[in-house]
Image (cartoon, rainbow, N blue to C red; front, side, top):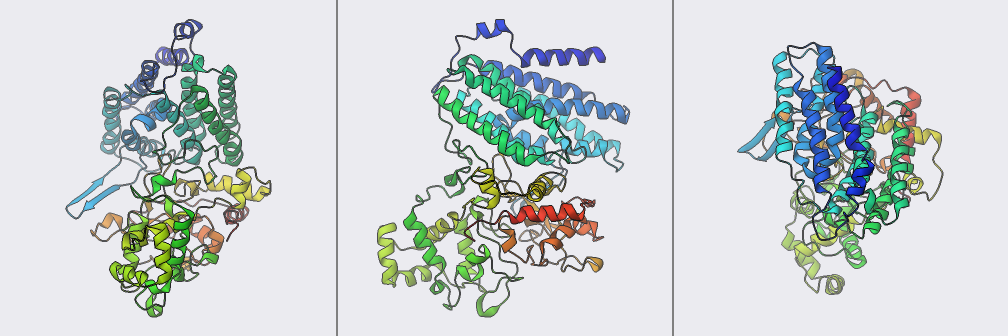
Length: 606
């Protein structure tokens, strides 16, 4: 056994650091703009080697072996999986999602006749089974590890690293860097062992390997040296402390953002351009900047270009009460700018003062979601507007009547002439309002400005709060930076829903589950009862009361609820709760720090 382990380690070191002879042999390889990468073979071989090692140790897990031996083989397999992870994310994302899934039932609901309930079979599940407190049957353990034993060789056989171009490999590096900062160092996929920092080291070793493969292509050789120095520094930083004490603020500010700069410099050096048709802006060098996202990719296909004129028209429509049947409410009735586009009420107020079903969510940064409303019943902002117009307790008006009212207003005739070539119809009306909402992404809070090096004003308490939020308190495993919504990095193509067992009131000593069924409807799926979309914490100091039912008035109450382990932690029967029920054991000084950090996310204009 020891001989095999030594051979694997020697093999990895050999492939990770190219020999002088190999570098000479590759000296005639160059980066290409329009052709397949000359480095595909070598990158593919490295990918194979990591997957083969991943599979080797997974194959050694067996119900007939001791728990100690299975744990040891799991850790070795997972280490090699983490070496492969940046390539999996880039070139086999669906298998990455499957192999890295949290230990939560996945329910896919296309329509009432096609509802799939999928039990996960992933590394996260296996970690909980092998290292958790609960006793797991051999049959259940076998179900998970056997799937991985079969799946990993399948991934290798069906790889697609064949015709990639060099820009694809550079984007792979970039996505790997973003994934580490926004999800990897949060504990998202190491729920029991909290091995996230070590996992990030393995990810960086692979990024370093790819950079070494491209060593002789750098026109500016000092850029290659900068890369290696920066990766080594990032790895040293990751190894410098344990999970709870890790300074994520400094890591992202001084390492992640520096690495994004190196991506840009490398693209220039190689004379290539990264694709503009993805969720992230490839030229952005700061995760907490408004330029980080590619806004076009968070809009409907063929959406008209965002212009100042369209934003201003949308703002006017947003505030116009004539768009409701009674002429008494507008979008701004429930979304007040001074309250970060919420309304301060426990439940939103509709026509004739009628309380609506749920609390008014903020619209700031709302565009960076893939579904809208707490129950996700709209898939884009334009669709959300349709729902509000048709709701009998809200605007209660059909879209054609809205268009007619606008058409009869001379002011709007002039505006639509200049913005939409005089075409007043519900499509353009909805687009204008949605365009205004999409403009509400300032990224100019105190925290953002510190991350952007525009000021140096964060206190030690506020920085501690961010580090706790991203680490020990596990908040960022659902509220992903930089938007702190539930939209999942690094692709940002899915918005998560969670069941945290929200109570009806803040009386935690006599807790009662809130009756709102959430995602249970429209298909009546019991496994989705009480699920709601993860909201953002940006501008949270202005958006009380909190939760879909407005049950909590203060951030202290919110933190007390989470610190208790949600509904289950309070003793409620919440069968499909996604929030761990174990207490977080946060001390008062830590809770105060987290709240102090969250208050730094208030944008200056609010």
